Amino acid sequence: VFYLDYSNIRLVWAITSVIRTVVASESNKISRGIIDKGMDNLDTYTNFATENRKKILDLKNTQEEIRDKLTRILNAIDQNQISSEQISQQISDISNNINLVKSNLQTFNTRAMVSITSLKQMGGNSAQYAANLERDLQTLYSPSLQSLNSATSTLYNMESSINSNSQTIFGIKTDISRILDMINQNLIDLNQIDKVFQTLDTNLGDIQQFDPDLILQPIPVEYKPVSEDILEAGSISNSVTYLDYLLPSLLILVIMFDSILLSSILIVKEKNLPVYFRNMISPTNDIVFALSIFISSLFLVLTQVAILLIISSFVFGISLQQNLAEIAILITIISSIFILFGMLIGYIFKSEETSTVAGISTIILFLLFSSILLPVETLPSIIGSITKFSPFVVAEIALRKIMIFDLSIALSISELLVLSIYFVVLSSVVILAQSLIRKRST
Image (cartoon, rainbow, N blue to C red; front, side, top):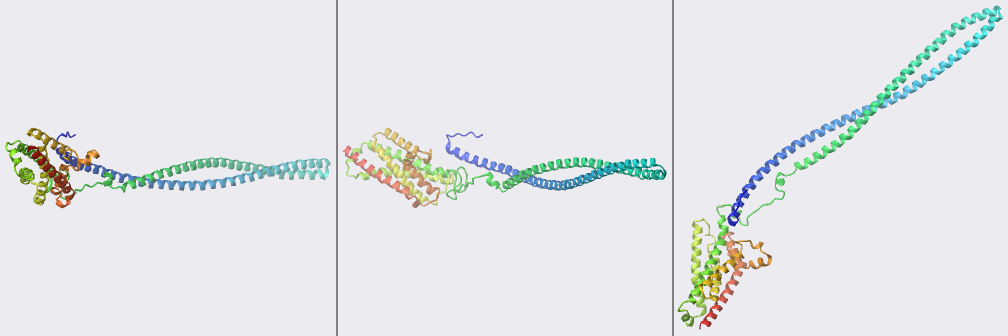
């Protein structure tokens, strides 16, 4: 935390500018380090997402292969189940046929035994023939019946085995169907996970394309001085220093203070001289009286300004040699205008005290409506529009163009025009005031 004394506003601006520059530079370094680390981590996350997406795709392909194989097995089981059912049906049919044969055989045996019994009762050869026939019948009937019973038992065992296998196959089929359902659900989940990783990979790729400088400064701003020799306020350069920015305002302030007070006091002192009446009745032109005060005041003011410029050049190292002639011309014009203001105040008031108060009040008024305390742009629109034509503001702008921007005085034609209008109007008013005072005195 920096505690600032805003009463020293110019110094505060210089200090805060330096502090902000240093802090901004360090903040940019720290931010760049954080962003670079984030970009490195982003690369790691991108590679992680890409690798895991490949694994998910491989797992998805494996699941699909397993699903296809199980589907083929299930189809084969269905086909085998159909064949088993057909075989079971055929065995059942054969078993029924065998039972029918057994029934027919038993019926035949019963009927044959009845016939044989009848033959035995007849006696003679018939009985002998019946005995032989009975023996042959028993020889054929018993083995045939046993064979049919054995075939029936075998067929029953085969049918039971087929039915048991069908139940086992049905259980296997049920398990395979359940596994297929699980695999299908896994494939749905894998597709969703793959979409998430695909979106993540796309977003991470878009973030990787971001410029770290754009993240650090979304709106790139570049500050350039209007002159190549001018740096940011508060910085130090071999050609332009912070004092160079203040020098035009300080010069105008010194010129205004000296010119207004000096010329007004000289006018009042002359009016209070014992020989003032004699001077008024002398055959001297009014312009000569006003011009004498004007030249005297101008000489003294220019002398003070010259001393100030010499001190600024040798002590503070401010370069003035390039545009010295243009600076001298402009300072002369500015001094003349404020001297005329002071002379007008001197003609209006009679005592030194009142003229001094009026002069200081005028100086304060010009100072309040100038860019020294507040920028003209921050003032209300109406006051700002009027302030732009203040002699202090116009003179400061013209002097700044020459001293800081190294521009020719010809490029300050608009300011010179305003100052010329001030000079002509004030000169006319001063001469008129001199004439009125002379008429009143005589």
